[in-house]
Length: 154
Image (cartoon, rainbow, N blue to C red):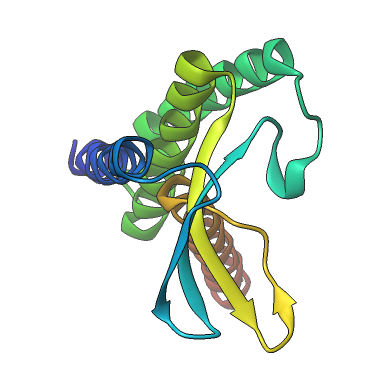
């Protein structure tokens, strides 16, 4: 149950920040948090990461529903035995639902975190994207840890 609370927390934070961006910023408006590093920039993405598959909403709807069902299944089956797996799955679930809501409501995803690494402007993203990436990393580490422990016990 606590892993679902992680998903709900991610979802609430994601939707509140997107609501703020939609209601208080014009599209493409930007302001610096850390000059030359971090900006809040109102952006919309009609596709997936880096703008790929733009306009393929039916594809995103189907894939997201399949992913959500798979995550819930894995949470019910495996998260009870592995806390880190449960945390990672909770993060991914919250992120997937957050971007799914955008696609249902707006047919695009609201992005706003704009990062510069030197002269490279990283693609603008949001809280849901962050939760997805961190969640996948945590799941990967949990999986590697489990495999390592299996190898040690043999």
